[in-house]
Length: 436
Image (cartoon, rainbow, N blue to C red; front, side):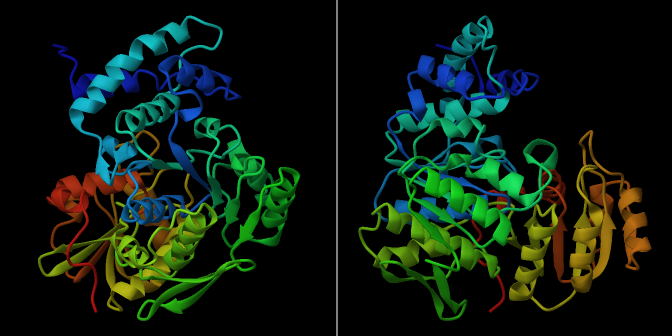
């Protein structure tokens, strides 16, 4: 019997973090071919890219398809609390034993590849291939695949999906993807495949036109939110998607608050319609209501307080968060904030300030993190109330408000959950969601 443990597997995965990114997909294709899952294997894929909203759109698609009776897989990038969030089947995380055994099986193949001109796989390539193997083992019918970075050269892009979804285009990872929205759109649109339907969310004219051109070149049927697609309704009555085939009522995304989620849910519904995955329209409401994703406006009741965990770290994500907060409460929030050095503080702080009783600035245990003092100084310079704390433990004590928001980085969410004893609540869907 193998003594290879889960901790061994995590350490083995981490050892590939130093492997350089490869400007091409040939290494990933070779790795997966040697593992017996060429082009991702026999699973059908829904491929989801974009700047913001990818995770929630994937969560909607997975839940909707599972409630239609399919065996589902899903992978999310990044994970928030547990590495095993990256590898799911039927809404459940990969078991520890399966994770360890699959990594152990993959290591010899990865080491063989390292001895070739391809070089060894990167950590992200290894993780993506692990998801493919797990879904093969679980005999998954349909998997939802979230793009990691960009699209054209992302390791997920070795698949030929049933549909390609691009949720949004914003400025992120500009050092890799390009300085303009049009350049970024060019990279994101790399997931569009010849003859495969494509669905895109609302976006500015420039990037939309880039995607339209690429879809036309690849003869990919294209549905655009705001053109072929439109959303009607509200959170009380539920939402309806208007599409070229008519209209489809899908209820309310109860576990993911915020008006942007109606948009993302509409893209998810459209992807099922475009691929003929709807067997029972009545099950759409149930699938929509049960969709859940950690760390994205995640509401966590905690005694007399309500906590929200959201990894917003760029202006579009901050805007989506601020539109969601009034759906939870109109009362002021204590905002616990920590950020990485390569993310701009100003946009997030200014967006959240109207909802803040105070900002409590905390450290993140990461080499690229801003210091609490840096963040607090900027909060004060912008004219708001902020204090620096030497530890998360100190910052999370004696909070006077009924509502607490933890935001600024996905890295921060895990540390706060562990420090406050909320760990067991954040890693699973809550029962009580938000005020009615």
